[in-house]
Structure formats: C-alpha cells, structure tokens
Length: 184
Image (cartoon, rainbow, N blue to C red; front, side):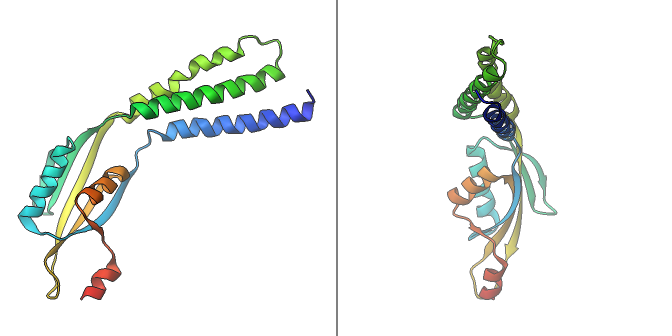
C-alpha cells in the first residue's frame, strides 16, 4: 500500500479512536442543571405531589430547610444495560478498525486483532461510573398576582433527564420572565 494513503488512513483512524474514547468517557458524565418551573398549584398539595413523585422514582428526603422552602432528595442512578452493551459494541468496532490499520503499518504484528478483547472495558467503565447517588434540590416560592390564580415557582437542581421527566409527568411549564411580566 502507498505510504501517503496509509499515513492519512492511520491519522483519521487515530482521530476516530480519540473521539470514541471521549464519547465513552462522557457517557457517565454528571449533567446536573438548574431550571425554574411554574406549577399551577401552591402550598401543601404541591409539596405532597412532589414528594409522591420523587418517592415513586426511588428518591428519599435527605434534607429539609423550612426557612428557604428547600427540600433535597437523594436517589441512586442505575446504569442502562443497553448503553453498556452499545458502548462495548462501539469499542469493539473501533478497536477492530484500529487493529486493521495497525496491521497494515506493522505487518509482522500478528496479535493486533486480539486487542478487541479490550472492548468490554468500555461497558465496565460505564457501568461502574454511571451508578452513583444523585441529588435533586427543590425550592418552592409562591407567585401571587391579583389577576391570576395562585401558582408556584420551583427552582430545581437535578440531572437534565430527571428535569425533563419531572416537567413532563407533573405538567410543569418553564418559567419565562416575559410571560410573568405580561400577565401582570
């Protein structure tokens, strides 16, 4: 094979391997966000609904700050078996491609295809890293206007997937300053 073709193929394969490495590493990254949501309820019924929701999702109350209306829940994030298998599959394909390119560069190295045996390490890494305790911090503030029914502002700090599921399940709306000012 021609040297320029081999060098360019090796360079592209190395870049893809680096990308795959960072993709696997990012699979277990913490993605905590803070968001503000509007609830159409206020007071005790809202707090009971939120507590019931988080209890159903296997969270438990770890701290209550009555002065700031803040509750902290904690739960254990379970890793996804599908994602662990998928990452192992991607790693196997990537390692096979890298071994193919290296076999052209080093024809005397016979054991390069055996590198694919390292692929399960990607799934193991994800499985160990993704299983961790997760906290959800929830602060409730009353929004009161003379023209609108009582509502509450929820300031929630949680994983972005948990925020999306909470917003969908409890029919919460995103807080928009313009919308609140226009209602006044």
